[in-house]
Image (cartoon, rainbow, N blue to C red; front, side):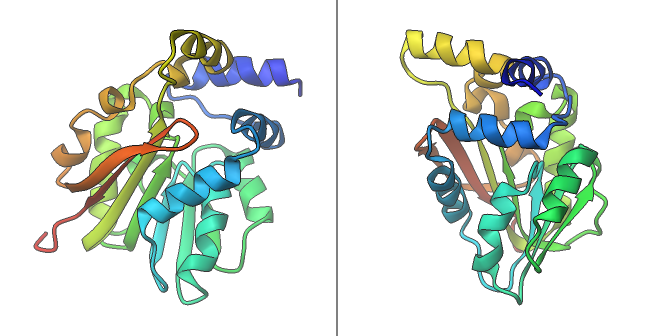
Length: 218
């Protein structure tokens, strides 16, 4: 598949709830997009989530499993990372590369197929903008539901570059995915779902994060 076609597909589906169904091409685009810094960027996202040995982790919108594989050694063999994505091809790709303590399932954030209180940590990176706008609040409520009391949430999203020219160039490449301000995209959905926001801010490589916690009394 050509890079131009992938860019078109990504732009077309990024803000309307579509899936990205070409994992190999996506990996190439992601490497280019992060200008060689993808590993460093997602290591920072993982660190912001504060994973612990033994954690049961859910990665919502896991894509090719890139973040899951970074989290895998941190939670140690006593922990487990479950990746969820609506794209069958992404799940297949991630499963073929899964470490022993990672599994991948097909599903959507607004209808998580897990019992209440199943996880210690839920992460979601560069995935919220792919969800249909009307489904995003329910996705946050679902993340809250599947966390144990005291469990943690980490959402990471794109943040547009500050300069006007840079914004225009990035917008040409990524379409709607980079046109939003992440604070506007997320709005009050995280606290409205019942979370207590602990920290938020910018990360390198045009990323923004929110870390929150499900109250222990829930």
